[in-house]
Image 1 (spheres, rainbow, N blue to C red):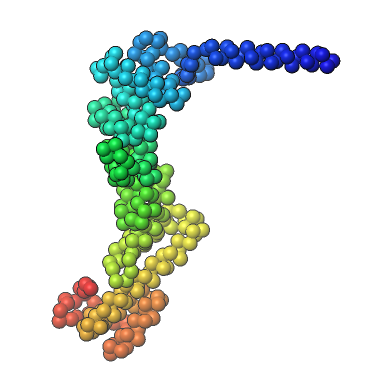
Image 2 (cartoon, rainbow, N blue to C red):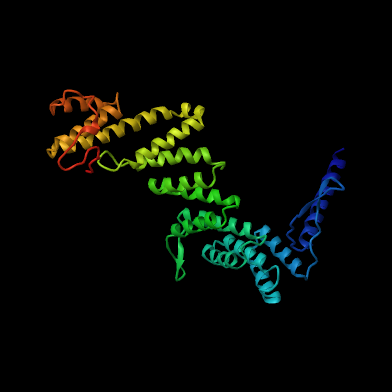
Length: 348
């Protein structure tokens, strides 16, 4: 039995050695599987590769090299294709896309971007356009990670601006492409995390407006509200962001009530209400300090009328009494001032 096991083991070694020899003898032929559905057989079948020596066959071999990660040999094949067939060949747009993919694989992002610009400028609308947009999006994502663009061969320029340009081009020029709404979201997310709430809110608003049925609608609506709220700098500044945030959160609560309850949107709306009341109260305090009591009364009464039950309303009541207003419920619109027309809300 021992001899039988030894013989079997030796046979396995011989077989393994033989297979290794055969594998080394085979040429390096990366392979792409292209499938199509055959209704007669009710299954997907593999399409045979085009014959070598033709433009289709050369392109197929180049793509096989790209799939294998052999970008150097793929680029060599691309240069040979261009030299042999020229830019007038019907497959030249596909060659440009393949070249860009090779350059991205070699981390030559600036060159790849130039190739894709050439492609989209000359051949936009052909079958390979979606692939070109996907590659451009990849370049934008790389630039957003902090990879620098080259100047005189030295990586010294920020790529973020170019990344934003690419995302804008995709979303504006190709709105029907599925990548367009994701490009909008990507730019909005980047601006939000970069501490640019006002700009990010604009991008989320574009996403909501241009793609009302977007798969990102709920996320964008919530993030637009967060961005608007984050853009409010305090009671000494414009409260337009607060108003925008209030509208966004209110819309979110109507559209997604269960999620809104779970996420505490009601508390956020209460907080916004308190801040808007505080803003109104602060304006009244300003006019009181500069000795324009009628305008101060106007705003204190507005706080009581518009924001009852808030902390600011509680503070406005004694201020009115101090200014000699006994009826805190008097309509604010009746207040006049020598420097203000009735009902006009003075600026700070």
